[in-house]
Length: 155
Image (cartoon, rainbow, N blue to C red; front, top):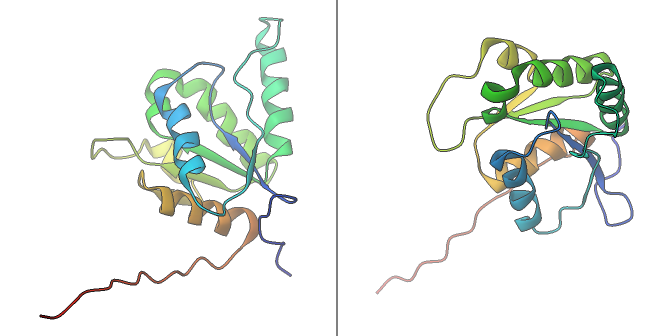
């Protein structure tokens, strides 16, 4: 049985890894998602940390956010700066049996960290179509085969 496709009434619930810190790649994910046509999603990741600075309270907040999501998206660029939080978020996703999509490093060809690569259900480049298709496949098992039509004129 496959889940229903995403609609405005039934958007795909997405958690984007963040470690409670602003990062350009975190924001870039949403820029790409917003540029996609006929793609509806709900952001389950809230970057604002709870008022308590206690590490366990932060972990509990992440568990809550990840549990709400259907799929977890991890921009690899965040891993360098906050690998402890990203490791926690990815392992939490796996504990909740949520699929993990890793977006490779932006603008550079670099190997993914072994821990991140090992837990990824799918790896994609920074390409709006690839990211959206991976989310649809992993979250709702939607068929994402598309054909590009190129019109050209012979003189």
